[in-house]
Image (tube, rainbow, N blue to C red; front, side, top):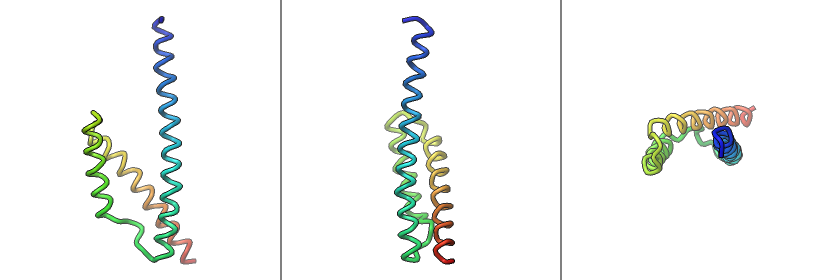
Length: 97
């Protein structure tokens, strides 16, 4: 296999992984949308700091086991959690209208 073919094969794999990540994030946000609606209906707060801390700790451990930088995994998860909380706040606000 030539250098160009090898690089192209790596890039196809990366493209497939990126597509899978997007699909997984979309599914995750569909579920967190339902959680946000449930929380709004039951007058629960948009954020759950104790659960967030447990999730971050759990995923840092998984990252370490997988050879991924746990700092990176925490930053990524924190970004996702912050976006979910933002969505939950919007749902709560629209439910109160």
